[in-house]
Image 1 (spheres, rainbow, N blue to C red):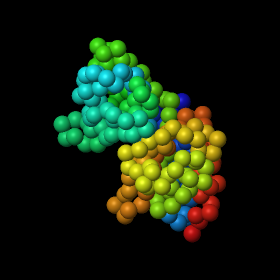
Image 2: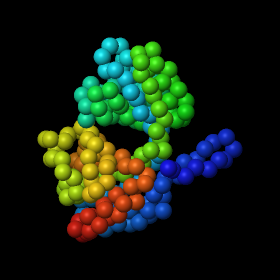
Image 3: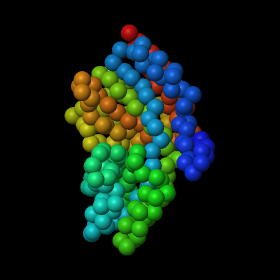
Image 4: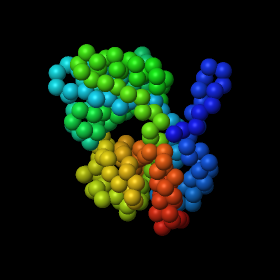
Length: 213
């Protein structure tokens, strides 16, 4: 679980791997085609809902974007009237989605989503502390991950908009293809349980040694 501290009425969330941030930045500067980065904690809600009928559309109005229709895919969520991208809706199974937001307060967002889902027999549960995220970028990002992942990570098989629950090394992760950056380098995201996060980072650091410039 992420460490938290109270400052007035604002709760500050500390990344469970905060002590590794500098190490990853320094290592990334020495790598050719790979960069490893910790992402800031976000609000996350596990949504259970019958995909048939009007339920997904009703929840989408609160979430900030449509829920993906196909398993193992994700769509972008936006926040506020400015429609700024702030999160994702990831379909994990026939009736399960993981919704994330960098702009929402977890407890407020959970309540709003649960209220929208309830009339259709659905539920929304705050799971913000259940996962943390690591970003893997660069021209060799897919090659790095492929050395410890059994799924086909080639762009034609795992393009932007895809996600998959899989193993990296021996740890369960949720792998997300975010696309490519402005320079055409791959951009992938790993959701991992905090209890396995240290192991996953150690695995990434070890596997990345072959990309030292």
